[in-house]
Length: 309
Ligand code: ATP
Ligand code: MN
Ligand code: MN
Image (cartoon, rainbow, N blue to C red; front, side):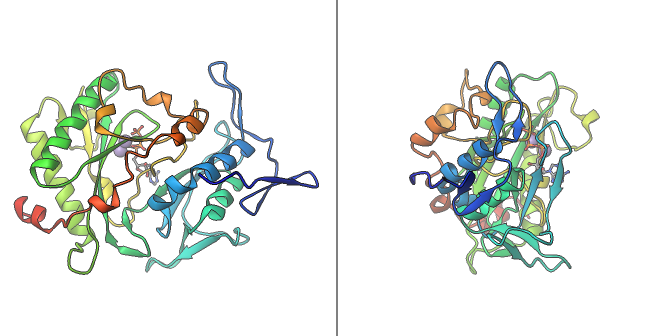
């Protein structure tokens, strides 16, 4: 981790070269007796975590949840650059009329924090190539009333299914109620698949898992279909779909972050609320369980064949 580069110049806070306005603005109010989290805390977090975050967000179109007045104020998804955007942010063309925002370096990440950007939701594409998927996300969404233990058990079912298909599953918390099981796939010219294939594969695997455990899993989006089940949300895998990035904060009480885990951590007693902006300094000192994420990527083509996609 780099030494913090924040300096206070004539009363102004500058982090990674970005001047921070209203650094004392409270973004997450005090929670469970803990101190409030300010914009200064957020941008310092982004700077400290940049090395871990950037491989998962850089050079991809990104949606940002902004809450300039904090999590109690108005929140909105921002996809496109606005006039006057910080020059540390880049634009990426995605065929649609308006280019998307993208981050290339720590300064861009801090610029997002400066603008009250609390959550980072990238496309699942190859960096610099929005038309090519490079990962598959199985977003496990438990029905209300289910325990986190049920989500843990579900993630292990998804893991086993993916391994049986020769795919390497990684797992992260979301900073919310569920878990994401994510598979890195090769995106070089020989291995690349289309967005349609990527999503069709995720759907086929999800439906096979449901067929094996119809009382535990559903693949139907409608909340009323959940009835005590886990919704395997495969819809994260089409073009323009997003999922929260590893290490992204969440604009929810507690300032939780989406946290990459090793499978050994995914067992009884795992408390996803333990991973927050407040606990991040200690978390960043530990080895990254996702350090091998990109190198573990395999071609999806054999998997497509096995699933008949
Ligand atoms: P949880 O564990 O609480 O489900 P989550 O991040 O998986 O957390 P979901 O509601 O399942 O939350 O959403 C999955 C993803 O879908 C989000 O991370 C986000 O990237 C995307 N998403 C959700 N709502 C929107 C929206 N209104 N606009 C754009 N993308 C969205
Ligand atoms: Mn989810
Ligand atoms: Mn979902």
